[in-house]
Length: 174
Image 1: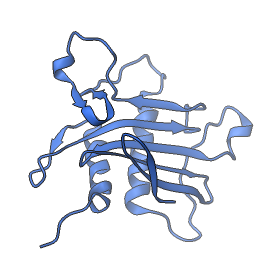
Image 2 (image 1 turned 120 degrees about the horizontal axis):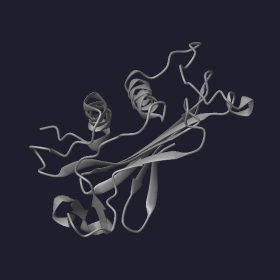
Image 3 (image 1 turned 90 degrees about the vertical axis):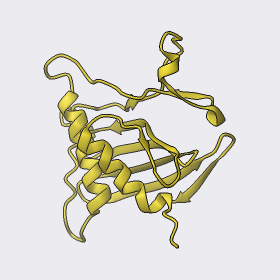
């Protein structure tokens, strides 16, 4: 009998987050463990010049503490849902485009001699040739994993998967 590993389901987990475009708490029927998005980080993407983090980490507010997921091993509370709101042209759509780009990049990869459709920040000429950066922190199987990558329109510069325990980090692939 084959036991499904985190590495086999990681792209599917990301796809679920992107299709629904909100954070999901999902119970895996075969493990009964929670899988959650912790952070999504982008830099040099469309209107996001500087590093920007979409975080599901709860504040220290105690009013709705019973509604958060507590990761005892990490002493971390996560929000079960999030809403994105803001004025016109404040970046909401560009954040979702970043999610969609990252999803397609992870699932489909790249082809030799094919341009990568990254969309760097264009209002500063110095940023057009700089890499675009994406990072996901996900809690799965009682462990936090960080997957990040940086690309230009020509090539993948870095791709890394890190396993984060409560005391150390281990690079699983780089």
